[in-house]
Amino acid sequence: MVVVVGGRASGKRTYAASLGYADADMADGVLDERPVLLNLQDYIAKCPDDLVPEEIADALANKEVVSCCEIGNGVVPLDPGERAWREQVGRTLNILAERADSVVRMVCGIPVVLK
Image (cartoon, rainbow, N blue to C red; front, side):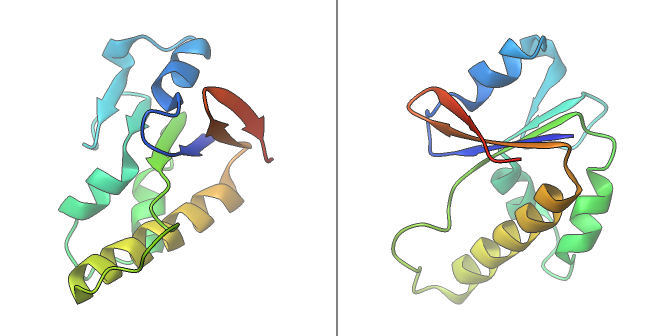
C-alpha cells in the first residue's frame, strides 16, 4: 500500500494518477472495490463512532493507494465530535503508515517520500 498525505489541493490525486491509476480506479471517500481510496478523512467521518482505528485500517488492507488530507495541523476544534474525528483520522493514518510499503507527503505538487 502507498499512503499519500497532504493539504487540500496538494496533488494527491495527481500523484495517484502518476502511479498508473485512472479516475475510474479512484473512490472518493467511500469504501468499495476500487484500488484507490481518496479522502480517507471523509470515509472516517461516515464511520460509526465506536469503530476503532485498527478496524478501519483492517478494512483498507486491500487498497493499493490511500490518500488523506492533513487535518492534524492547526487549531484544535472546540466541538468534541470534531476533535474525536480528527483523533480517529490521525490514529488511523499512523497505523496505515506503519503497515504501508511507502508513505508520500505531497507539498505544492511535489512528492516527498517519507518511507
